[in-house]
Structures are given as structure tokens and as C-alpha cells.
Image (cartoon, rainbow, N blue to C red; front, side, top):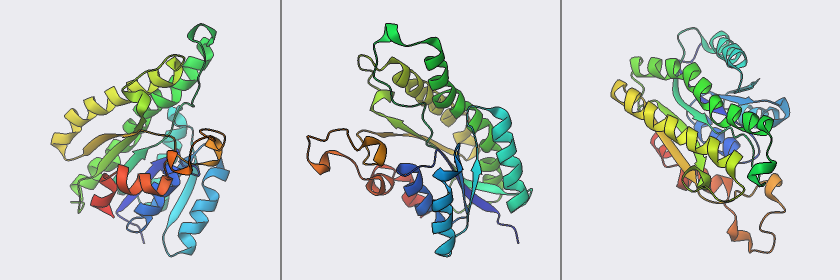
Length: 231
């Protein structure tokens, strides 16, 4: 039996992406996208073991062909007429603090390839499914959500490669909101203003109290209020 509406989360890892997927899995089958299978396998097993439905697909969001393959697998799994209730772009080109003149062109290209071009390709891949959600009269407006950072609005010294991609992603979200909002798709850019407490940031702010970092679960509930519309 096919499901008419799904939620798609790109950039699934141990933090915000996983927490968002858990929230949406209470109501929709979820599709977990990440480059490495190890980033989604445990989460997919967890959701499925608790009565939800989740599939993981190894996907490079900076590659149009990889995203095309992901969409094909989704339609194979859920049916050709599948629509999306939500598509969340949580992928990032990586955090780097380095003097501008020491950053190679390849580093900029890699960062922009995920944060900026990745957001573009992800949107082109999943907006058709979100529009299908509109046609299928989704209970709530189908939502395209981009997770941003402090660097999306404030670019600090030695943060050029990270912040350039984040600013570009915010610009994309504004354009898409004005184009697809009238068509029934909610588009938003949610800024996560702080350091999320995940294994990768273990050594960050280590001289600060534990509450100096953000809980990924708290982010998904309190800082991404669009989730509450759906779940």
C-alpha cells in the first residue's frame, strides 16, 4: 500500500536532522538523506522499531544525478503519485574558521556546492512533490524548510567560506517563498542561533556551562515552530 504524503529530511546526522525526522515520523513516513549510510541507518531502525516508517537513501545533495536517483527510489517505495508534506534541507558545507587569503578555491567550491547549490538542487528535486501535496489537499500547507545559522545574517572574520553559503541559502529561500507561497507551499528559513550539542562540537565551548549549547531536541520543538503545525 502506498502512502500519499511523506516528509523528507536532507542532512541527517546525530543532531538537528535526526530530531526533526523523529518529530515528523509521528505522522508521516520519513525519508532520510545523507551521504553516508551510517548517518541514517540507526535512525531508520529506531523509527521503524517504534511503529513508524523510515527509509534512508545515500545522497549527495550537491549532485543533481544523486538527487534524481533519490527521487526515483522514493517513488518506487511510495508510489509514482507520492506527495510531500515537508522537505527539510539541513545539509551544510561544513564549518570552517580560517583567514580568507588562506582558503583555496576548492574549499569555497565544496562549501558552496552543498550549502548553496545543494539547496538549489534539493528544491528543484522536491518542490514537485510538495506541489503534489498541495494537489492532494494536505492537512497543512506543504513546507520547504531551510535550516540556517547565525552566519546567515552576520558574517564574522575568518568565516567567509561558511557564511557565503549560508547567505546564499537565505536568499534562495526568500525567492522561493515569493514564488511558491502563492501556489500553496510554505517556504521558510529557520536560523539556529547557537552551537548544537552533538559529538562534533564536544570540544567547543568546553569552558562554558552545559546550557551554553543548544539541545537538538529543543531546537526541533522550540526553534523550528513549523514542526508544530505538522506534528
